[in-house]
Every structure is written in C-alpha cells, then in structure tokens.
Length: 191
Image (cartoon, rainbow, N blue to C red):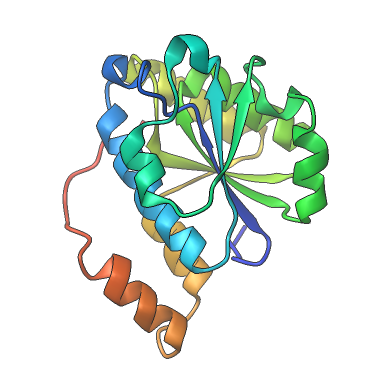
C-alpha cells in the first residue's frame, strides 16, 4: 500500500499528559506524531486526536497541540475510538480510506482502534516510532498483531515522502524548507 495524501488521515491516539510519563518512548512518540502532523496539515491531510477519559488522564500533550493548527479532537471512553459515538460516521464521511495510526498505549487503545478500522475496511499504516506502551515488548507485540491482521508498519519519513511524491514542485519545496531540512538524524526506537 502506497500512501496518498488525498486518501489519508492521521489518527493520533491518546498522547495525553497523564499517560506520557509512564511510556518508554513517550517523548519520541510525541515528537514524531507532531512532526508528521505538521506535514499532514501542510499537505491538506486531516489530523485527528483522541483523548481517553481526559478527566483522569489529562488532555493531549501541549507540545503536540501547539504543533498542529486545526486537529479534530475526540474525547472517548471506549478503548476502540471507532466505537465512540459519531466517530465511525464522521470518519466515513471524510472519504479517507488510508489511516496512519499512532499513539498510546499501543497494545490497548491503538491496537483496538486499528483492528476495528481494519474490520471496517480501512487500510491502516502503523506509525512505528510514534506508537508506544509502558513496555516496548507490548508495543512490539501489538505491532506484530496489527501486521498479521493486515496493517503495514511505516515510519514518519516513509509517509511524508509518499504523500509528497516528487521533489520538483512547490509542495516539496515548502515542506522541505519547513519540515524536512531541519529534521535531525537521530536514533529512534521502533517497537
């Protein structure tokens, strides 16, 4: 599955202030989701965030919110966001069939949401370096389970460059200047 900006939606699950301190790679997940979220918005790809029981876990990480201009935020009580009232209908209404999925916790809310999306006929890309759990082993197991169910593991760079498609147009030049050029080479943890 190649990613296309006109059919994609970035879904960032539960990167919330109360949960991040216990995640093994929580800071990296926020950085990567924020970066790809900025690229997505610049290219017209919708960005959706979910917040699991924000009364207890807090709202989305402020640095994530600050990096985005107009994300749609869904508050939820179901672990599976697709089961939340209005979510499935709103998603279907976008016409977007490729979902780039990331967040926390990989083995709970991200996994259950991803499995439901696959069951509903969506094509799911598991954004590996932006998906985390309290223990990396659980995130790794969730990723393997999602791949077995039909999702594809991807990196933020893979998605960004597939959305861009080419290097000789104004979109690439703008994205390169704003996002790609300053992206530092650094080791990433992949679950």
